[in-house]
Length: 121
Image (cartoon, rainbow, N blue to C red; front, side):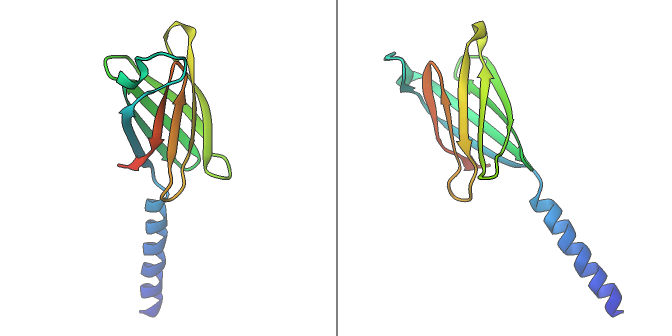
């Protein structure tokens, strides 16, 4: 009987660990800031969603009224990530962020700068 109880307990901990290792989703919504001198940046609203699965980072972002864009990258040993996201017309935006307990951030830097503190969904 004791063996059965110990086996059930061990299985419970393994399943709990697997659940913790599943995807984690984050989001940020806010306005842009000027980078290139454009006074329009503070009028642009952006939503950024980031999903982390192990070391894999996938993101989507969409400026209000524009097409949705994506990026994919991996976390480094410090929980940071970097990528380039392709925009229309051959343009790109630099994506950088950090996923740490209580201080997860993201920045999209291109024609305007967008980002800040990510919130868990």
